Length: 219
Image 1: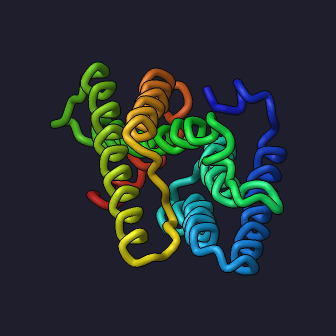
Image 2: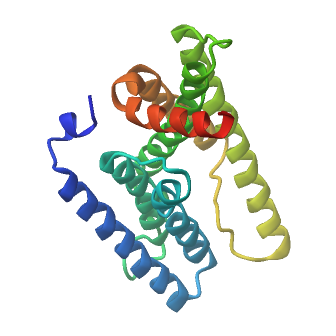
């Protein structure tokens, strides 16, 4: 089963939405340059780089992603870039002004991290006859993988914030305190659980592509 079966949106429309959000991010980057906002420039530039991963994987490694998965990835980085930019003429961005924005972007981003972890372990499991990973182990692995990545991300946010304060510069990532950190990890876990439960239904094609790539590398 593909993600399209749930979305009810054609592949052509999914590709159009991905391109539209990518172009919008180019506009956000231009606004960031015009404003001289390091945070907007860095976060949007990284997001644009992430949107190039699906075509890079297909071109260089023969790993083709379903258009819905590309849309999923693009949506996560687009919402993050938009959240850093905020409303026109306002000094408050969406992360600071909309209470649920951070939760949505963390859940989406963590689900992508979980998908990477799931795809990797399932492809290795299917590729090697010497390795067997029970479904329960895969479920726990995904949770621990995402939580470890989430903790690392919070440490990076904290370190960047401290460095910016010490140097008197604007920070490119902001940490709003312990409560914010704990909620981030909660929504990271939600994203991980979603992938752990529904990964088999929607990531099978990607797992197959990665498994095929492993076969070509080891044969």
